[in-house]
Amino acid sequence: MRANITRVQAPWVRRLREVVGVPELAIVLVSYAVFVYYLSASYDTNLFDELHYLLMTQLLSAPDLLAETGLHGARTYLYPWLLTALLPITGWNPPVLKILVAMLQYAALVATVLALAVCIGPGDAQRAPAARRTVLVLGLWNPYLIQATTLLLTDALAACAIAGSLLAAWRCDLGRLRGALASVGLAAAAAALRPAALPALVFVAGTIALRSVARGDVVWRRFGWRGALALAPLLAQLALNVRYFGLWTVLPAAPMYSLQRMWAVHRLRYVTSVDPASPSAIIYANPIAIAPHETIYSAIVNEPTAFVVAIGAHLFHVLDWGYIHVYVPDLYALSRLVGSVFVYTAWAIIALGAISVVRRWWRSAIRLERDGLWLALGMATLLYAGFTATTQMETRYAYPTMLLALPFAGPGGLALLDWLRAGPGHWLAAGFAWALACAGLLYLSLWLDLTTGKIDWFAHYLG
Image (cartoon, rainbow, N blue to C red; front, side, top):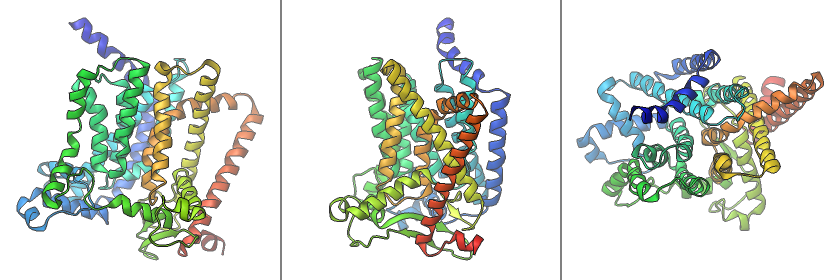
């Protein structure tokens, strides 16, 4: 029995020892310093949706008050339930509660990126550390993701759950309850945290089906009831919707996606500003005039030009995240430019990795047993990017897309190193291409800001 346990656990122990060394600890420490910086600036302040979640936490922790006032139909309930579960530790002390939640969310980000770095790597053991460290740097030094963990919002946690669920669907033993919980359970939790994460359930189902075909190790009679049980995170939403709204749905009671479909074609982007100079919702309006009732889908036929403009802008926003802060304190903060360059660089390395993986398939033919996870991650990235493009885009909507694509940064980093080792000319070519691409994307991003009528970087810094 002891030998069997050793055989099961030893690979995970070895992989953790491989990935956690002095360079990896240094990466995490730098990331943690950035986390502390952002948390110190926001731990005692709650804005907009954060206040709504605190209010819902109060209601859920006080049944009499909840029975009297009811619930907000546009919200999900799992997140305030999690906050309520922490109240015995923190008491009703919002700053302390926020610090504890931020630390848990940051830990979830570190664990997710570490899992992506450990579980996907090249076959060459000598090159594996460089690939994993590329994934760690681009995941744990991303200022947008770090800042998101410091807020009482669902975005960072849901993004981690989406990526983690797909990874677990391919790697974990689905014949055990913990495997079902790590895959289906995390996907269900993501959807219960944030309705926009509902596609995670589709991704997990597709990955499990692909795994069944590729490896033949999914025992459906053992997985079936465990997978159904793992949907439990959706039950709280269902129960409260039935009780307070009379609706048998695991989605918010309010028709949020119906609204999002309309906003998506009328608005190219959306930013919430708390800048004293312009404290308001800033809307990037579609320059094509269209009827108010048009949706992103009806516009395909009725307003094709407006549809192309909207979809193009939304897909661009997947690559260009704009302001680092969810609630922007300074519309002309130079940190936005630094953050944008970081994200452009990350996407460039991810694209190199995707090309490397496809080239390998082209040379040696795709083998699902070996390449199935790459295929699942790539398809999920593209499908989720397409899904978010049908909604009103905010920066935080792009977090899951980045985490799903992040493993491709491993082979991308190796491809870049191979290119640079070829000589100084390659360094010059890579640097010139990178600078030109960043300048072009930044110019387009700042030009889009002009459509708001409230943000003009060119006049602010050059005029």
